[in-house]
Image 1 (cartoon, helix red, strand yellow):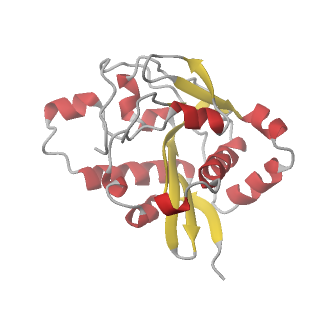
Image 2 (spheres, helix red, strand yellow):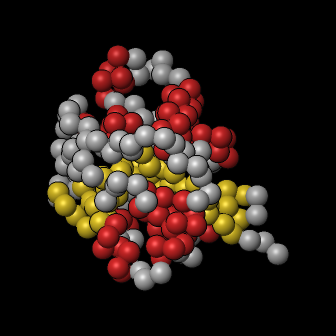
Amino acid sequence: MASRRLRPMTAADLPSLPEPCSSCTFWEVGLSDLAVSPDHLDRSTIKNEWAEAVTARWGYCGVLASHDTETIGYLTMAPARYVRRLGAFASTPVSPDAAVVMSAYVAPEHRGHGIGRQLMQAAAGLVARRDIRALEAVGTYHDGPSCMMPAGWLQAVGFSIVRDHPVTPRLRMDLQTTVRWRPGLGAAWHRLAGLVSQPVGVPEPTSYVTHEGNDPLVPGHS
């Protein structure tokens, strides 16, 4: 019988992500990098280096959903210092007590079954045992293909707007509130977090404070 499971995602899982997601560097590359050599970026290498750095720092770089051996969804997240595109958005910087959710994806044939919500809950569980009090994300009101998560969907899975913007609001999920909202979920989160060893050292959800421009929308995958 086919089974569905969620587990922490590491750099080794990048090849299992669907194209073009496995080499998309929308969040991993800053606008200043694009200005220097937009046509000569080795995106696969950049994506791998990003995933390896975050995995080394945290033990994971997101959450993976699978159905038997097939990857059916994923979520990426990182400390703000590893999310170079953040500086392009007027609604940042993120709060210093938060980790950043960068992207979430569910295969079209598996949508409508709550997998996206489960991915987000699992992400919250992985950081809840650290000195991180919230997840934050820059969403979009833009309709159509985008590397950014829809603000409406983020609100549906437990986020609230903390700094609005006509196109790219910043949203936050307070982990203490979410634990109270879903009784018993904390134990499940800890079981998930137990699947990875926690690296030695203090996590770094420090804010990325500089702004690189005010034109944040680049529709589609980078």
